[in-house]
Every structure is written in structure tokens, then in C-alpha cells.
Amino acid sequence: MLGDFGDVRPSLSGPLLGAQRIAQLYYATHLRHGAMMRLEPAILNGEWSLLRYLDGALDSVQTFEFTDVQVSRVRIQRNPVKLARLKEKLLAF
Image (cartoon, rainbow, N blue to C red):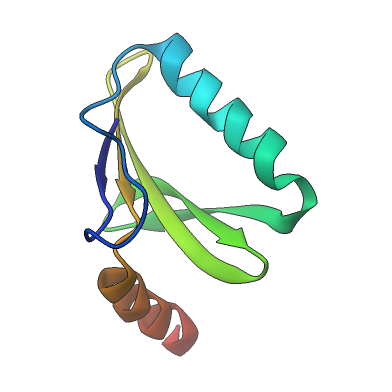
């Protein structure tokens, strides 16, 4: 799991490796935000993605790369400048 947080938001200290650690992060995020969090599947740039909203605002975009049988990489975009550009494009769509 790799992330671009724009030096503005809390970030990972480095790549997060291993399915269990990544699953634990998703679970902890769910416990922390609960009903305030909404996930929407999307296809962005030809890749499966999750749009994560907190309190109705776009908080992150998570893009997935796959091998034949599993997720091989997750990229997280939380950079507010880049998310604002994406939000404009999503609203225009």
C-alpha cells in the first residue's frame, strides 16, 4: 500500500506490506469512522478504485492493481489538491 498525502494529512511512514496489515488498517478505519464513512466503487483511469467519503466530503481515492488471483498493490490518494481536481471531474461527469 502506497500513498500520496500531500504533506498535509496524516500519512503512512512508508509502504504498508502484507494482506493482514492492510486488512487491519481497513478495519481500524471502519471502527474509527463508522457511519460517517461511505465507500463507492469506481473505475478511474481503467483501474478499479474506491472513493472514500467522510461526512459527505471526498477524503481519499484508493486504486487497486491485480495479479491473476489477488490484489498486488493499493495506491491511496489523499492529497487535497489532487482530490479537488478529481472532485471537479466527478461533478462534471
